[in-house]
Image (cartoon, rainbow, N blue to C red; front, side, top):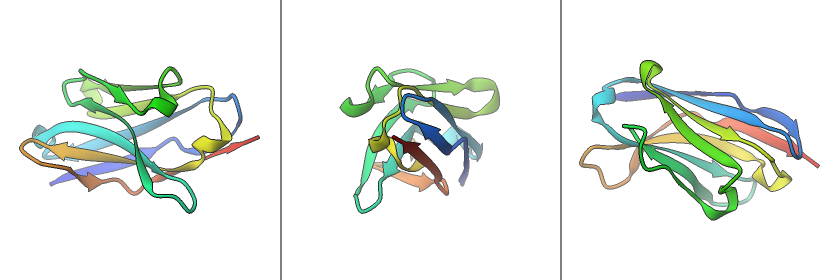
Length: 119
């Protein structure tokens, strides 16, 4: 099994930056893609960004393009989400997740980390 540990959330003013981290452990050889999702209060969970475990082919939802950057640290089995120019509408619980090799959906989830952006 794969285990995920997120960190880096917090409170920031609009226009500020945060970097989220997601450290993977366990059967990391089974990981195909790592993704970030978020759930705002009263809203459905939504996709934010994802990257192949090789560090290639990052993708983003339109609302975060040019503000967020996803990357992978090969040495530490960690995926980062650098979030710049944060807006109050980015406020949410952010989750990292794993799509395993041969899997059809992201099915391993972290515990979530709160990001709050004040106006």
